[in-house]
Image 1 (cartoon, rainbow, N blue to C red):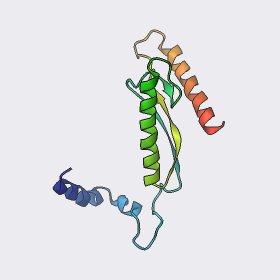
Image 2: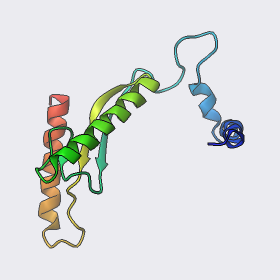
Image 3: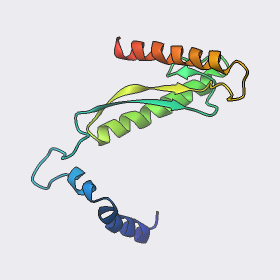
Image 4: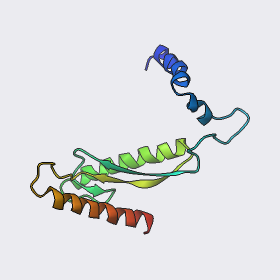
Length: 128
């Protein structure tokens, strides 16, 4: 990104989003000010084609397990980096790569099966 654009963005952000000032570090404090520090996050996402799986690492549906594992590792790195940068804790991610077509005659059954898989993973990830 060119330096001029970066300076323009830095000067416009406080004007567009005045609450962002509260999330910056205070010069005399080592603790961040705002809503995110100490919080946790868990991501649920729908994917296009990442190797055909549902869940996270180790949950490939045997269509392309190596590609699935590569993508899941990359997403874990991004999530962990985001957590560290915001003083948060990453609790994981559920990725769905098997969404039924909206025009599928068995859509209702397939979407209920997907809900069951999501519930199973949430129970596993949160010890429910």
